[in-house]
Length: 147
Image (cartoon, rainbow, N blue to C red; front, side, top):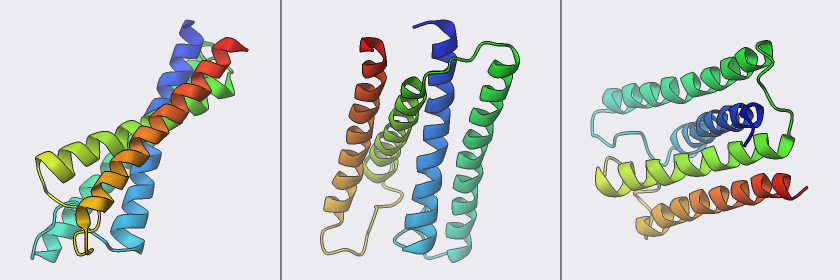
């Protein structure tokens, strides 16, 4: 991959990590209130850890935007929408896979929907969505090479 397209892909990847993190935090933590970053009887701890989570994905969004600006300023940024969108999908999928495997299964700090009749279903669906996003991103990215 040419350097310009590689830079564009990496920026998309970073933005995808931040974007899906934002969607997760807004939808699951705030709107649906299914869980917090750490499930605890201490609501202050739950809100604090959600704030740390929000800070992390916000930093990724800022980082991705700064990378685009810096690479464009140095004339080192590709122009392929397929490479960029593929990177966003792959980054979003990686977020779901890593967050799901680490937080839901290894550390068990929370589940996607812990009070559901079958919480494992929601945890596995979260992972499946992550895998699907990675596959879609790879297909979009690969279609650029064939064009």
